[in-house]
Length: 307
Image 1 (spheres, rainbow, N blue to C red):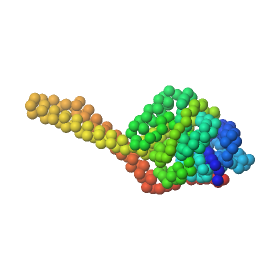
Image 2 (image 1 turned 90 degrees about the vertical axis):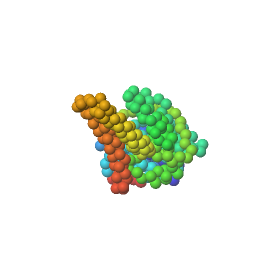
Image 3 (image 1 turned 90 degrees about the horizontal axis):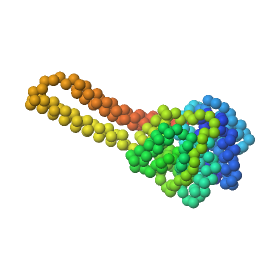
Image 4 (image 1 turned 135 degrees about the horizontal axis):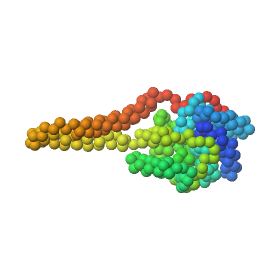
């Protein structure tokens, strides 16, 4: 059994794989422990899997899992965790924004007795103001509306103990939010700070659309606040509608106003209709996730692997 498994989800990272592997090997030499590198090719359309297979031919520490198509970042990490055999597992992206050298600090902290050690981003100078602002806002809102302590300003870059990996395997929901699941599991958790680097090569696959979907997955997986919000909004709109009804009766019976009130009527209909549609949409998100879990389809399909 290796002392450490390093799980690397890969999607179109041909420009980074060679350098990443060299850095990871240097880290393993400094730690002087038996390590396996698990590259999970998440349906890349470039030469990523070709490069990984070439590395595997010359280094038996390099393992790979090749998906039949793109299943998503969180699913790729999940597959790597499922196949890992190390006493501890590190999750790191392939774009080199998270410096592999930080793994030494993570492992040192892990050896102090912590089951989870997260890498907390101190600086994110490579990202736009809008992305930094939305990420900062999302994690703080998520912390407020959930009952679990999800560390702010952290991604999936962390080291976790084997017992945490085994518990994650028992959580087969389709819409993964691993950083939330790991926080939910508990045990002794801590973090270290680091400066995030610029992407070494290639382009990020995390578009704003994917980030919004990821945020929705995180909220719906660990909070029922949206459903409570819909209930509150329903009572609020009902109260406003009741007051408008009393005003309409007062105008008709006491003030003897017979104005048709087209404007106020249309505004009321549009307002109430909008709240109803929002409510139906939020409830639909939860029902959709329930349906995905009930169908119980496999999380991913492996095309080829050397494990």
